[in-house]
Image (cartoon, rainbow, N blue to C red):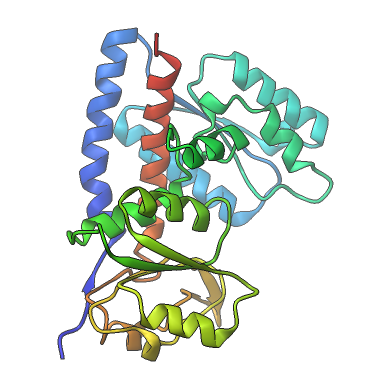
Amino acid sequence: MVEAKLLEGKVLAAKIQEAIKSDAERFLKQTGEKPCLRAIQVGEDASATWYLNQQEKLAGKLGIAFEKISSAKTADQKSLLGEVDKANRGKCHGVFITMPLPAGYNADEVLLKLDPKKDVEGIHPANLGLIVLRKEKIIPPTAYAAFKLIEAAGVTLRGKKAVIVGQSAIVGRPVQMLLGEQRVTTIVCNTGTPEAEIKKAVSESQILVACAGTPQMIKGEWIPEGQIVIDVGTSEVNGKITGDVEFEEAKKRASYITPVPGGVGPLTVTMLMQNLMHACNWQNEK
């Protein structure tokens, strides 16, 4: 029995980062401006702080300016909206807002306030709508990372069948659209799908994208021989980060599989920076 090859995000990220760095240098030469990301922190969530630190570290590596607005300046809805407005009118090219927002904030109002051309997370309704219309400019980074890892398997996608377990607006639905563009037939399962139907869909597909956020809900024995398994899930179980798929059993059957951690996660911040460069180019279109 041959075990699955690992699709590790850091390997693909390194290649993409080289291209981003070149794009950033080219943009600086053409415009006289460094690509600039402004990160707005709301609250003191530890995981959000970690993610901001990763952004700052990678930005420095790629020649991208990084500005951080502390949570002290976003203590309530009004002040947060004020910072978003400043970012919209300022010289930064991309805006990142830590999500989910704490209790008492209206996320819809904040997102609608954000300039879609600076929305590096791709979560403004206008950007999600452009994906549906096949005119996407900015794609949610986690969905983007999952799709890039599927491509990294190097197989012909046209005519394949995929199952997506989870239908969030920032992962499941965008991945469905991206796969559809490659003429992949997709089935989407959600919290209303009976387990027996999920098992059947998984066992009959060549590609699995697990993004439900429920640890080990996809049993290893469901995985058919040769399947490409992309596990987006990250849940903490007994102090360990665990995916949505039973990894040890699944890797005995799959042809390619993402580890958790180490798969989709390390690539996500890179795709955020890729989105920043898309935003720079979008804002400079004539």
